[in-house]
Length: 69
Image 1 (tube, rainbow, N blue to C red):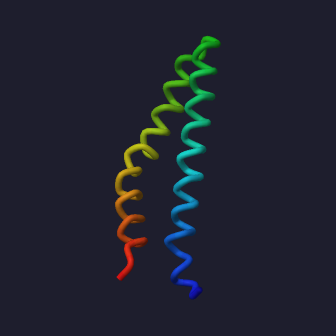
Image 2: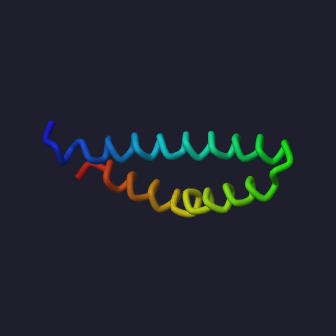
């Protein structure tokens, strides 16, 4: 398999990792908030917004890259 063919698979795995990290960080922010640190939890959620905001573009780009020519 040529290296260029590995790119969509690599990006797909990186995207899966991003989603897993986003979910775990969100769980941690909920845990922090339940223990009285609402400001910290809100800051974390604000940072997670960037991941969420870029998610659709990443998903669409991966679909294009993985479409056979």
